[in-house]
Image (cartoon, rainbow, N blue to C red; front, top):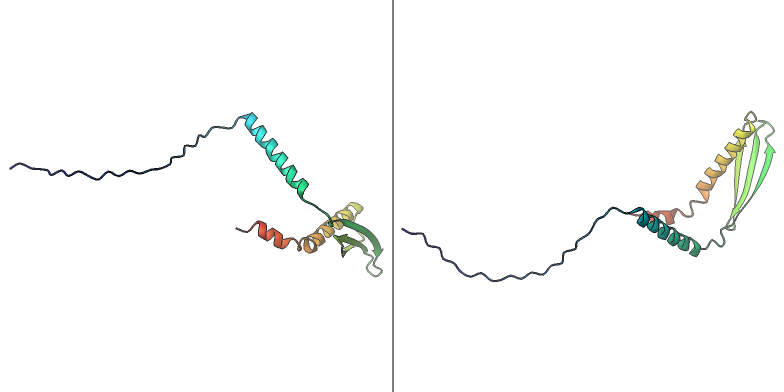
Length: 130
């Protein structure tokens, strides 16, 4: 006739926890300026600590003419850290002087990228490894 409920006492459970509250505020101009100054000074200290001994770059330009074709041949002999390299760039005779200069810049930069940067390729792979 009547519903009865039986109540039994439960065991007490005590848990300990740590709650971290992060206050997020918009940075002020002053704090941003101070942060940039600290980053710049830290970067300057790191760059000052890196030594570049033995990383000298020396170069000489030689120009000659290829007889049958009439093309100018610019040979760039350069030495990086004691390693001597040679870069030959052929230029058509009909190019304007500014175009020849641009072609020499492009040819040398491609040659440097393909020869000198190969040596640091493994270091770059280690830097950007996921």
